Image (cartoon, rainbow, N blue to C red; front, side, top):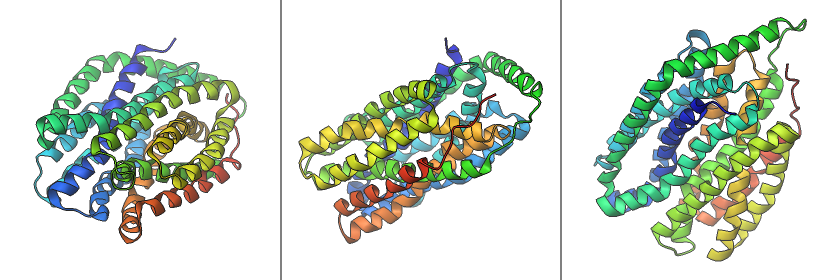
Length: 387
């Protein structure tokens, strides 16, 4: 049975990843209000993910050295403040600044939260990490449609309510943090004791971790490509409403959130490596089929398995990274949950320029080609021995 604190950390994960999912749904509104082109609008996603990708491994490093688990509390506050002010900014500079602030909060939360989840899960680590991942993926899923409904009802300034949401969850985790910390430390000490009793010291496997990072790079570009351009594709290519496009993005991530839970169970039963290989091999062909279709019904049907498979290997990748670098748990969490994932956000301005120069259809063909990267790299990683 999982510790109740895992669910609390999953709720915090929901909040920080909500902002990343919701930002994509704000782009059509910001384009209409400020007359941005695709490339400029995509740069907002780039800004949020640039700071997250650069700083998150640093937070992981600090976590390994100074045990900064408490930082998840201010991280939630900063994330709420950064995203909430997007609805009030009337200049591009201020929009970029809000995205950067939000990115700092996202970067600060992930490494320590993932490390706490690992410590709280004495057994069934795949299930525990999938529950934590489910919270983040559900946040991505709820973000687009929620922010669209709020903006339709209250105007774009209504996203300021997110400041209250971030603050409320921060207070909740602050209340439970001391007990959460004690339980996690107790489990870590038991694990370290088992490792010290082993005649063979635990070593870090940097070579396979580097290959795993390639899997993450490819997945990240696909993920953020869909996150940034799916609503725009729905509106400008399939000729549907903005609300319909936001709903499609939310459905993609809701289905993906269930895929995260399925992936966690697969890890515990068939292993992390087999889970990753299976997901990316099938995904390649589904993305190709999606890129070739022009009908909204077929596109909607294809979104379901695509969303499932994007998230199925998520917890497997995070756990595998932690197992490759058992002596750098915070750092590897920062890389797998931050740097490697956020590389997709950094790629979005390039994809936006391609869309401006050609069409959104070409962007989705590029995403299909990118799918070859994680699929190929998945066959060069191995299942590490767990002590």
